[in-house]
Length: 594
Ligand code: G6P
Image (cartoon, rainbow, N blue to C red):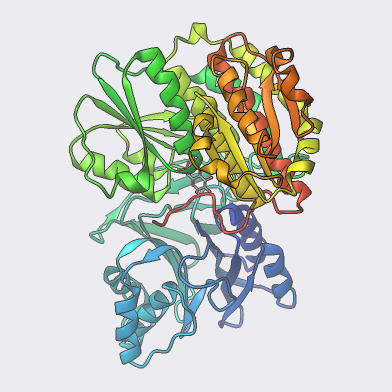
């Protein structure tokens, strides 16, 4: 959710690192972007554009971007439309600000600043920060103190970086609620402040993650130095760790898109998760489990509910984090609270975790990013082994989440991991079938995904992936529920993806599919080899297309290849429709605002 990169350098060649980091940060937001830098002419310059970093580069092509200090930003709009005027950096009297998060009291601050004669050009909350810093400088306060005063006045969650024409040797940052990572280049010629380690992947060997309330003050004299001050403004030290993000992780490696690369990594993720998994749930201590998450991670929780309740015979509640945190949840010491998050930064999930901790209960986090806020604040961390996921629509991370949850409740020796891995590879080899199916689906007005049992959360995830990527309205339903209302929508322009592996729910799901056919709806049946004979009559219907996926010997393991199937289907529908699969409109990978 908004990407930040900034650099303070002993050399003047800062353009490349700003642009290449912004490209890497596009997954955090990509509706507009901008840079500001203090040039060798000692003046503050700014370039902004709506759309991708390519547009920004085009807008900047006339400039020779040379200077010792600069900031860059990719935006996911919160306050104010997607326009160049609303794009960051926001500047005022030589101060330039880039910001991730929300200034909650910006309206009040804006009123005060307007009274003092400051004018505003954008609809953003961020512009208030630039004006506020500038107002302190106008009152004769130095840049560093002005920044500190301004930050003490704003409320909300944020990561902010500031530069000032009048102090070109200073790069300032603050972290409150949104992540921030810092580091030196290997030759110590550059110091960076960024919104995550992905931005720094090729730039630093070691990275330091700031803690809540930290300020960072970097200074250029003959050499570069920096200090971290805690929220009481006392100097403190923060550990630096090797930056594990490699170039290989952040490149497409021959695939057309990150998402396709990540779908094809699913078998590898399954093997790695299995090999590295070493966690246990203390079932004697826990009488129930609450799983709390958002988006795809929430669906991973829903699928886990089927597995955990069956295997451990303890109740599992799955909750949407943004709802959980604003009611008064009933918690108890014998409930294990598990927070699932790929990024580990989703503010809704993080706030829900803080709520549980504030009541004195311990929390477990299942996250893909070990250095994330959720991982750092949890009492116990289960790390998923998906590797870095760049495609905005989560794929391989979902696979790692569901396998981790399955392993939490299953004896590892009972998992037919090679069969699971091989079946997912087989689905990947069937890619052409999903392209053919996508060709038919892409012209439908709306879609249903239906399934029963563990295929129901798979249906939800399938519908989410499809709407995220193709913008076709798509709803997931329990197959048995479709007749209680949603079937009213069904006609010849509505496609239903029926997720019906040959399992104990198969016949019932096929009956629900028949009800759709009877109303002229079209069906894509995702089923398994074992159903080839059983579903024969059904398949004869001209409104039905079937894809037969591998039949796994243990039905509990079947969702893995269904998941890969729905990923490929959504991917190819979006591709055929000509959309940017890695950057679907209006979304961001890591949502750090409420
Ligand atoms: C955003 C993303 C979704 C993701 C959700 C939860 O909405 O667009 O793809 O599932 O956040 O993210 P998390 O990182 O907490 O799993």
